[in-house]
Image (tube, rainbow, N blue to C red; front, top):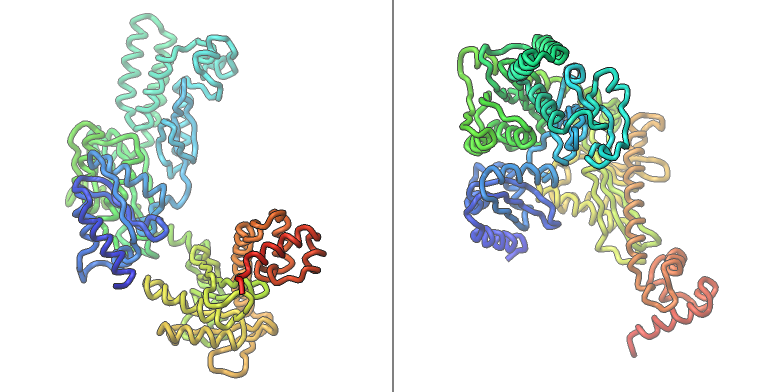
Length: 622
């Protein structure tokens, strides 16, 4: 029985013993890294479904199961807890096979800080310290306008003083200019009580949540009360606040005559570059008060229902406000989970609607059109950054090497060692002329013995290991392979490609280090590219990057080997002496074979005697 079959059998045994309650499951690889994190009403049933023999199962799922060596579960009391835990774990551990949701920019939030007499300010960082965050605001001007209104109508502090009771009671502070111009009520010196300030913060929250109608009614009641008590100055201040809120509300688009709170969600109709866009319009008291969107990546293998489900989960596990109604342009894959979660948070039953006709359907088409527009902008942004544009050097390389297809994805291999010891190999990947460092790979060469350098055998091993792994994982094949070396290294690479049945599926060339000559398989004479051409410069840049990466790996391996060297077991040999010996001889074996006179000149007679005695004692008896 093979190793893979054994692992699968162990996994199936473990799955059959999983609990049947709700919770979160994690598939882990051989390094205990998460491959996929999900939630389930019935953990055993859900995880078992991954192992069924289904010819319709997506290749992404098959690859996930093939890589998994373990599965861990966390049982929760209910589905709402499972939803929150799943979302937190995905953000924290970033599993490879989950949908990746990201803002295409870092949008700002308005923060109400969790502290005595809370401050209200803008930030682009969310810190989980109990503070409340409103946003993100795609329209920064709208956010600044809202913040300006808050500053004008509410007396809030802007200082960063510690306003805990002790320093206030001790009279450590004095009022500042903000107090004198009536922008702050002076809580730092005890002029405003904590309860009064908290009531103001509650009004700010109503404003930021879009409940301007309810806020106006609250202020109207306070104004009438102040007028009855003949506090006319306070009544005028409250009237000015109401006027400012009305002026602010006139800028917001009315989408329904009913004062209802709704969230409108839509997915873009098109997918491109393995990406889609999810968008949410926030309607409060019948007016659109804001919108936000997410770029959804790594979506291959997920249908629209699953994408909508993931977007809703991500959104509602981060927000602080839950509406009366939720409209979608696509039904979710697990709508019951979201409905139960929202209903629990809101305190009443909430339904998910997919409008089919009338004004509501027309409104959803507008939201979807915005999602499509943002996806188009995202594609344009990629073009601006050059991620989709084919560089001139790539086209020149195709022409100079007479390749059938554009060499968009290029892989380059290099071998590095120090005097034949610590042989390693590097594989660097360039996409559209740019390094893709997440795809870089390093290899410790196994077939080559220390002290016996063999670049040809090392090259054969690394290329063979690389493409066997690509076949096992159904990874992308390159458009071109560059081997750092001449005909010998190229022949070794070709031999490895033939062993893995990948030879002929893409071109492979060797680059001579001495004269920068290009070699093709089976051709005796090198091929020359103009020295100043963009294509040769690109090849050289890729080759130099492979060389740099190989040396980096080799140095790290040598450093690790030095830190755990056998030489440290010898009395009198410390880290500095060990480093001196390794630098001089290259390996422990060569230190062992060193002449006494050479050792004495390097480290002194006393330590030289200890080294000789140590290895003499370890030598096998004849």
